[in-house]
Length: 198
Image (cartoon, rainbow, N blue to C red; front, side, top):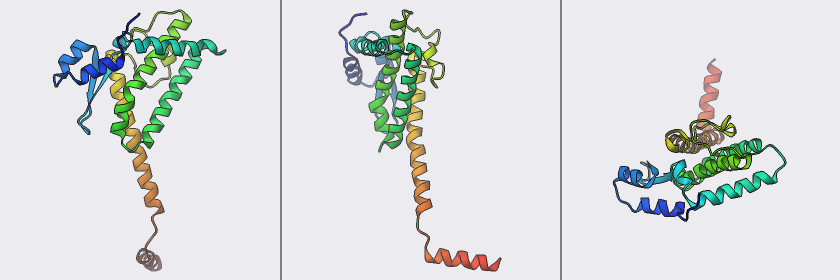
């Protein structure tokens, strides 16, 4: 597949297309998620549309080169890379000051990276590119169905997990803060009084 269309061009066109998101999806091969927290619309390609961009070819070539350079099983290296990438994404999401902004900036990059790694494995091993009908072995332990609904299920589920990672971290931080909160003298006296009555 050879193309000069970049993913950035496609996303920019979708951003400038106006408010008829359904028509934009139909005409562009992109999907979107409306971020109700920020009012932003986040566009991302279907896995098929991504393959039509020059970004896909570059990413697949890069990953294929890395996979060929290693001495371990290609599928094992790829699966480990996917797991580490997801773990890193969720850790960074948990530490982000604003989960909504973080997901807007990182969702498409993570989706396309995941699809490119799978396609690179196919090229290196001489198998057909994944089509969504069968799940490549590198996704055996991956927690998402990366091809369902052209990638829409992957994007939506990942979006929710990124938001949850930040929310869970905020709850943990609040619990830790409360646990370290100094106890007032009045609270100590009341506790001593209650203990003396027992």
